Amino acid sequence: MLHAIAVDDEETALQWFGRIAAVNPNLSVADMFQYPEDALAYVRSHPVDVAFLDVEMPEMSGLELAERLIRLDPFLRIVFVTVYSQNALDAFRAHAIGYLLKPLDSEALDEQVNHLTTLNMPRPIGSAAPPICVKCFGPFSVTVPSQPALTIRWKTAKTEELFTLLAYHQGKVKTKESMIETLWPEMDPDKSVNLFRVTCTYLRAALTELGFPDLLQRELDGYSLSATAVDCDVTRFQQAIRNLPALSADTLEAAAALYTGPFLEDKNYQWASAARTRLEADDRRLQNRLCDLYCAQITLSAPIRCWNSCCNTTPATRRPLRAWYGFGFGRSSRPPLKRLIGTMKQP
Image 1 (cartoon, rainbow, N blue to C red):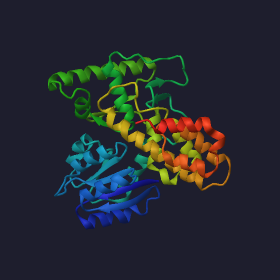
Image 2: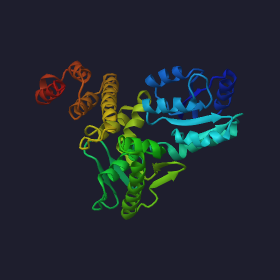
Image 3: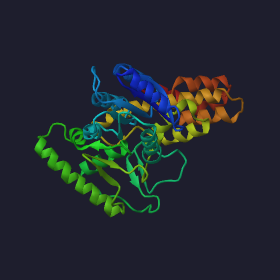
């Protein structure tokens, strides 16, 4: 089930969208907005999988709104709804995963929703592993489970950084312009364009040598990594965060195990700093949610799992500590308690 919002300055258009979306079993419309600022406020505090945006709006265009939404949530999918087919190229340059033409019909909407659910959404936690595993929590690594001894050779540091950037945005098209601005923010435009072209060639060659010539995909004026061929720990972790209230304790434990350290802790990428802070906050939210679930249980194994999870996760919060004392295990667990207190005192 995809959780969606719709934004259009015309109330009748929103009403029609809500009517045909209501019959799609894979789509749940969380809310609809006539004002872009209201949509931004909603996404700041609610998990949303896909946003259907009108392109032509008076206060803020759909293209600008898409950029701001993606800055809030890099995993949010954008679908534009427009009267003009010539807006398609601009839509994809704004990181859209698709566009629909007005007047909207149920068949076109169903086709777009099927595309989202089958091709572009992250794979569920616990399903069969894709050919390549990318680990972004803790030290960065790329492995091929079927060939453990195989290593990827990066021609340049920027080749590795480009791959890392695309892996972080797995399944989403990143435009050439946005990647150049991210990787070479202060370089002469002509030189940076040439470097980007060379770096893409190096990346494709490295992936081909690894045995995956089609992993780097080009779509219109952008690039992406195949969503079905790459298993990225950050993608699966973020999927759990987006569905936090609905997940069981076992599923959340599997997600918590993915967080083995700060995001790209051995890389000094400028663009990774904000993501690192956000993911640390997400990990604390996940631990709090686990604690709430465990406190609602009366079995002995639940608080023990909560304690182990807290001790193995940094940073820890005071809420799991309170839960531990609430179950009466403080005296018998002094060594791990000292460890937790030491962790809590860290800045």
